[in-house]
Image (cartoon, rainbow, N blue to C red; front, side, top):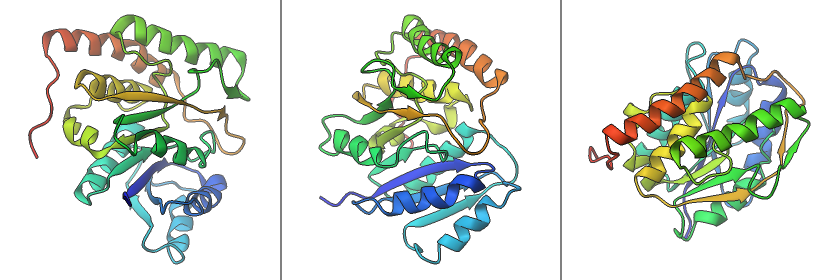
Length: 248
């Protein structure tokens, strides 16, 4: 079966990476499509995408937003765009090559037969597979997932992972308007919600390589949101059971 596949990449000041990333995804087998959601990058990221659309007009798409509105809101916008256009599988991915575009095929292969509903590119399912991160950040990331599992019971070793493939049923089943967080807590909230709704999750081992070009978007505010957001999610799940979205 020829599934329609859409990769969503939010961008802000990714001029150094965007051209190479677009060409990498467009060059994969399987006719992946790509949606770039750019938050008004002053460095001209969106202009590069528009130029490349001349070569990939049917597969390369662009949504431009005014200002930095947050990772989570970018993905929610992309998810709704994808559902409206009947894509079968929807991917999340970073633009900085910390996620290897070739692994998109492996994520798709994990869910294409519908044995699982959500595939997660995991840094920790087979040890610690992280390149170029300082040890302090590796430990913070690893123990963040341990913390999430301890508080929520979510059976995932890489709870903050942002490299994922959803079957459309997952995104239709989640009330996207009720997703609260915008930073790394967004990644946890989406996995936790999918799990609570009964969808089947699988982790696919990947090697995560820290960006070599451009600037990281990590901030203390984002980390704080994740720490306290996990507690909020657990409390909410106790007093307000998760139910499949019936709005569509």
